[in-house]
Amino acid sequence: MPEAKDTLTREQIEAELRGLTQWTYRDGGLVTVYKLENARQALDLIAAIGDIAEEANHHPDLDWRYNRVFLRFSSHDAGGQVTTRDVSAAATVSVLAERLGAAAEPEKYPG
Image 1 (cartoon, rainbow, N blue to C red):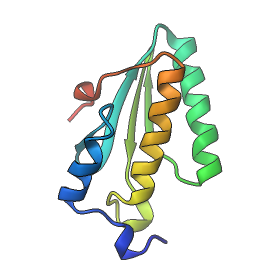
Image 2 (cartoon, rainbow, N blue to C red):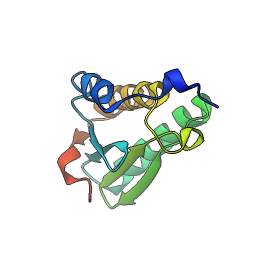
Image 3 (cartoon, rainbow, N blue to C red):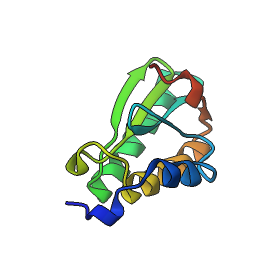
Image 4 (tube, one colour):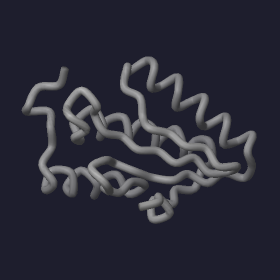
């Protein structure tokens, strides 16, 4: 269970997002959309994210639509709030997505 100090305020989230340009804050979570060339590449990204999530024991909400992967990080064990673990996970996924040639489209996250 995360400690209270791990939960970020809106101001802290905004400060962290300045270094996470592939992400935005919406509906209480860090969200983004990654676009790839085709469904196979999207599935490769999903599998790689799954590996990272299992290793960290921190899993995003994920939706797959053909060549786009929709992601949302928040900490369920912190009442759905954003914690330092979410920021760390988003940063790790950003590096991975770039390596796999994904284009970030955070503005396309629904809502």
